[in-house]
Image 1 (spheres, rainbow, N blue to C red):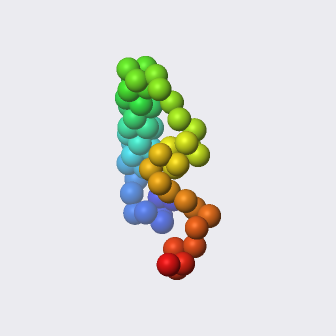
Image 2: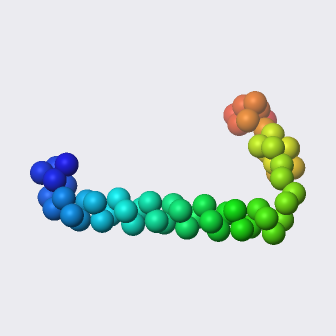
Length: 61
């Protein structure tokens, strides 16, 4: 991968660690938001409430 990207192994490792930390931060934020608003919907319920129908052909008028 070092040859492919032109980056050093340290740069690649640092980028991977930073991405992991960002993902962890996103997880913590989403957990906090979910605990503040414990009302959950299934994907199907959310799509119904938003009026999304994946079964409908968009070319049908």
